[in-house]
Length: 176
Image 1: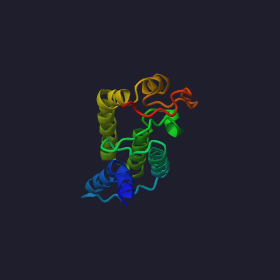
Image 2: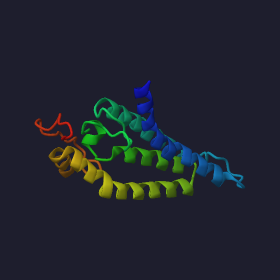
Image 3: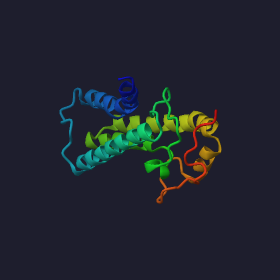
Image 4: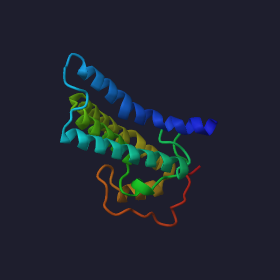
């Protein structure tokens, strides 16, 4: 039961940022307006597809963190092993990218300027967090293995081909 609750904690931030806040924004934006919540246009259909794609990728990343990383995506219960497989072989922050996809899709789906602003703020805060907190922490935890990963895998724009870590570092646990 403890493991289930631990892994369910991985859903807190993605659910809040990808669903709860966008829902509240749409509810607030719709007060006093006569337009329907879902605007029936090609943009809204495209937005729904984008959001759904982000959600599917998000689930895959959470699963990868649980199985490969032996931890969660949350800072209070970080992975015990460095994750460089799956989407992490293409980009260092696919979790944030997936939440941004969900937010961008919701912004299109609901024609919401508020959700667009949420996505921009979410990206800016995470950009600062990764540069000044997360990446230095990962360098301390995983040492040269993370520095090699960082040199080869971009932070935000995915590389087309997956990066393969050197065999000597592939299964490295954090030092200490």
